[in-house]
Picture 1 (cartoon, helix red, strand yellow):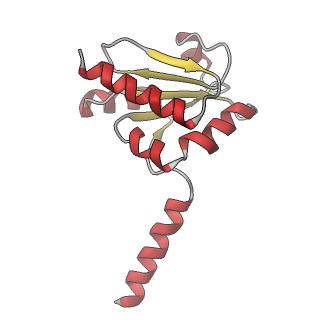
Picture 2 (cartoon, rainbow, N blue to C red):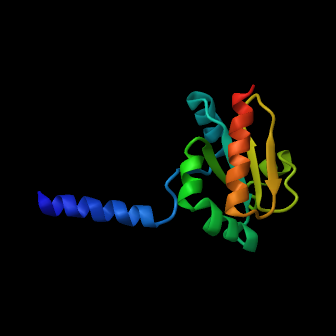
Amino acid sequence: MFKKLIGLVLCFMLIASLGYAVTWETDYDTAIKKALWQEKPICLVFYSDACYYCKKLDNEVLKAADVQELLEKFICVRINITHNRDLARKYRVRGVPVVVLRKPGSKIEGFTGYISKSDFIACLNQYLLNLRGR
């Protein structure tokens, strides 16, 4: 029994060390359905595999524990613009990274380019505060 418990703890630690605590969807339509069903806003991140600032945003901001905790209030979606050009066009993505915050039926907000962890947290908090005020 003790060996099984140790095994489970080690497995959990390994999974936690891989980076993300929140689940990132890769299918936009699935994310929209989840957002409607769970009544959560969406955090949509457009990126490219070749983008330096996308990787920097991912490693320094999106994987941070305090950001992960805040992102649990969102349905999170990562969209590779190379494989999903139509969606990128729909959101008028001209460069990456692009972060879009939206709740179906509400105003769309977001930003283009890399921002610091503290600015990212402030942006998410302000968006959530604006949603409560509606």
